[in-house]
Length: 189
Ligand SMILES: [Fe+2]
Image (cartoon, rainbow, N blue to C red; front, side, top):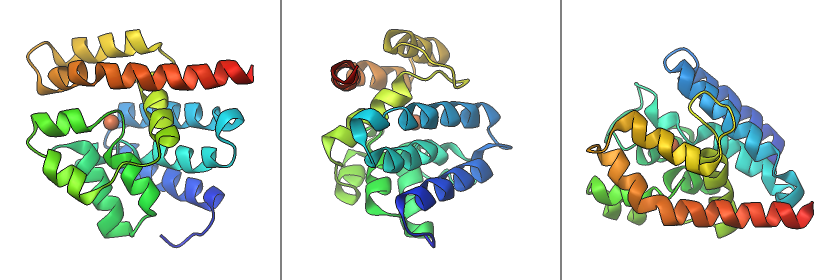
């Protein structure tokens, strides 16, 4: 990753995600931009770490890009691509690998050992913040409350799908993260 500094990192992440998603997966790019906007809005509680979070928000779903898909588990495919192709910052790789309580879907896909062996968890305040941003942004990038977002995922995939089972397993983790960030935002207000 050639550019140093958190602001440069955010621009780099934006440009990379745009290149990978905008044409191939325009709706995923719209979602990604919405998640990044949510991340920027957390500056009052995260300070300068909001730039790191915003970079991670841009990159969190790049594992869906068709030319990156390997295992089919997008957090792991995205994190490996960042690590191996771009030698990206470890914090970004870890945040992408574990975004939105990904360990539960990793279990469903028999990729738990690979995910946790290759990528440690990041510090909770950033992990929770990225989960909050992702889980309060709909597929088209507009704001949804977390209950609507969970419902939207269930209806998009249907009850039998592995993603729906994973989201059910992740719901306590997702709700705890959203509540934690909402509590911090309320404390600021
Ligand atoms: Fe994702």
